[in-house]
Length: 129
Image (cartoon, rainbow, N blue to C red; front, side, top):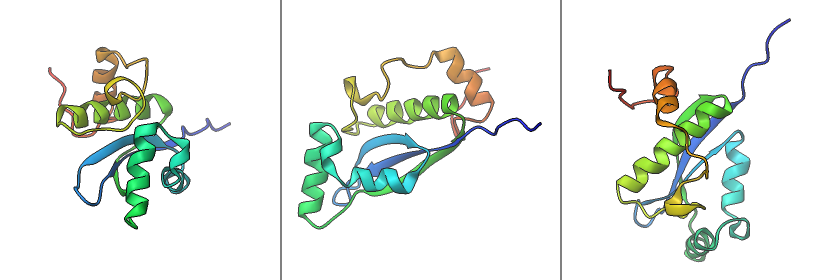
């Protein structure tokens, strides 16, 4: 009997095409459907809705960038948190839910992030020896 393969998740960002600034970091198993949902502002935070509505008024949609593709929910969650923090440290004004744009109320412990990085789940992140 074959073991079930973990789901593939896409970690992505949405940017404002007028400024190039990243405004959202997210994770999904169905990128097409999720992007379409982002373009219907009534399903998100007030700040996110206002941003999307302003784009739609100008005849624009957010620019989608794929940041990583992960296998498994745990890896995807850690990767999303990494990229969210990275964008906040760069000074991006994210519209994500939660305090300071952090997508989850339960951040992944640092030791687990190091473990997942060594497994290749968080691309481009260096792990101290």
